[in-house]
Length: 413
Image (cartoon, rainbow, N blue to C red):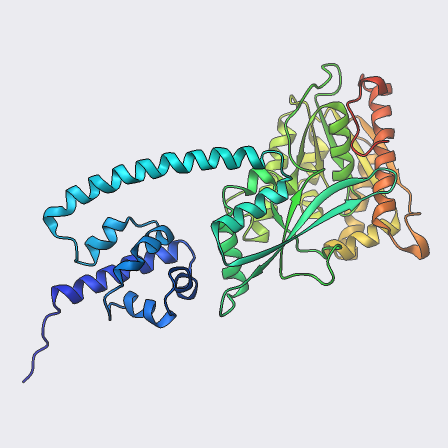
């Protein structure tokens, strides 16, 4: 009859060390491949350490500490190579060292903040991603639109993972969420699911960073103008563009539901994103005291809020009515079924024929390009002219400021 020998203290320490480090890597969404490359060892070597099958090389602990967030002293202690009597001294020494390093890092951060303060938002997001991970390549493409009124609408960030082997799509997206979690709301980040027009083909991962349509607070708004203005449209009617343009001219804040506050799951799950947009719209409908313009054009939100919109007390609504060609293009770009687009258009016509609130009606001409096509530059120029038409109506009929008191219009000659 044989009996198994109890594991030695050394082998038990290896197993404990491996379990703790593996969990730290998991929490940071780091694969064994990526971690092994970062500390300059083979994948098999690191896997053996994590399985408790071999002693970890102490020379890698500095890099492992930085990679996992576990302190150098803790790694030594878990590995069983730090004598117990030296533990308190080691932790005190490390604390003093980390304080000095922390002060040096703060100085570097301040210096870097001064350097990037005037950088475009997309460049700041790209810099943040690349500084936090060496596992991504980033390509920036600015979406410049318009001929008479040239504007940077947003910038696309095409992300290419360089993991070996390639990560599954959901895992790769989750890694981006983890790396940029603190930037989603302040920068208005969203995944670009539709075709990104400025690329040949559609890269697998495209983040959209808004510029012209970015969320922002009020500046020097006229106290006599309507306190809150809704720009209401349909998918691809560019009501969001018009709303942002009007907000800029009036000195109002601007809120685009696509880029506003979100539920924790909103960037991971389409249902969560729609639910967050509905909740945000309900909040904006209930608060008509802010000097702001907000836009609503998503067909799913319009469907969910039809009754609430009809009974809401809204100070002023800019209704952007697209023609048949633009509605058809909206179906293509936003994957909206034709019958759903027709239903939402009937909803808009109902608001126009029996307005439940003060409105400014703005019709988008269907002559937007040759041979029935919709040219993005022509569309932006048309929307810029409609924005000026809206501002004129706000001045004439709703106590808004006149042209001499409009703030500088973006892209306006």
